[in-house]
Image (cartoon, rainbow, N blue to C red):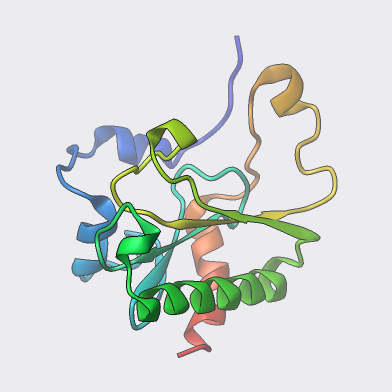
Amino acid sequence: MKRLWAPWRMQYIKKAKEGGCILCEKPKEDRDKENYILYRGVHSFVMLNTYPYNNGHLMVSPYAHSNSLEALSDDILLDMFKVTSLSTSVLKDAFSPEGFNVGMNLGKTAGAGIDDHLHIHIVPRWNGDTSFMPVISETRVLPEHLMDTYQKLLPHFKSLT
């Protein structure tokens, strides 16, 4: 039997399931800490991915609900990529990663977990961060609690505003 300690999941499991789009609803709430929102730009925002591939896995999402890049204005697209650039700088300062995976999954077939509201994933990477666990055990090891990651990144994002 495989076991992986993930204490933050119990909060998710026990909470009432929400309807609607979380990338529309979460930024409307005045609960940035609970929603892991780190930064609010003019047209887009940054939040931690609650199902990260690696510590510091961020999502940059437009406030506008769209599953299509071509449906977004140039102002929104530019803001998203500026915020993506700022986010990689923050992650460099906070965690000193050796690289990044930056990308989008457009559509369920492409692997999008939230397929009706596009967003950019930023995953910091370190040499050896995959180790043998995902390959042999199909298990990811995340050594830091999400709230600890949030608390480390928040001062860096606050310095941007």
